[in-house]
Length: 312
Ligand SMILES: Cc1ncc(COP(=O)(O)O)c(C=O)c1O
Image (cartoon, rainbow, N blue to C red; front, side):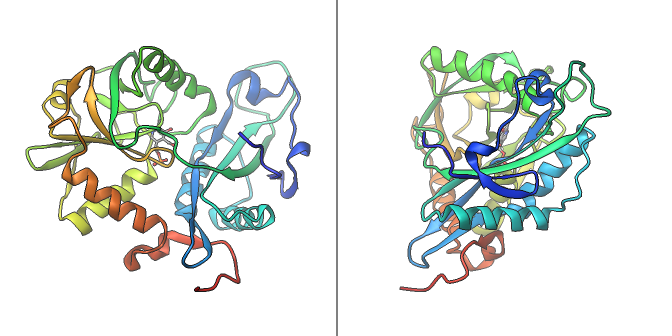
């Protein structure tokens, strides 16, 4: 993977090689950091790069920093402006992934969340698929349980808690699956290692509620809106049993990385007909039009980067 050329680091844009930390850094030693994941999509017809829902992503990012008692003077609008500057400096003309990161930067010994100094960085890089088989993934139920809200809140995108996702993902992939589904301590469906989950059964679309130890996904919200407006389907937010997945007609993951990934097999059982179903298919079409700013109704979600974009 090619490294970024620049980083927004502690308030200004610097060459990526200058955005460095020491090995004693608190965030690195104790996982006291939070991060985000945002995509920007290149629209070739408009010759414009659109950041997808940056304000919503930065709002969640700042909420995560609040969970870790970090104090920043930035609001989501300022972070969006900084991101636009960074993307212009990089001069990307392709789909990108954007990584905001906040972490305690003190080089000290001692695990805690108080009397520490937070630092903030944003980087971006060209990016394609995150899940290789996004038209038909084979997933497994992980033997790892999702972290509980009273252990490490899954609602916050906390760097240290991603070891939970990493355990699940590596075990799934080493066993030949594409992804893992994590259950919560009650045995209900939570999410993938970096994706929310939707299940279609008997004409209804279901997804776990935000109180079942999931990340409050921006793509999850986007998909709920698109399903309602474009497919006339209201999503039911409720706890989902493992056996309901086996009996589902369709299943898909949502996430900034995964976008909309069809899940067609779970532990060697076919979901529905064992291939991408009609709801997932239609939703993917609407979703990809939306993120490239081709859907009039949702253009406000797509923030243009370049001033001088023009129609060919
Ligand atoms: C654990 C987890 N769940 C769900 C998601 C999807 O969230 P979003 O749609 O905001 O990218 C992610 C990705 O960031 C994640 O890491």
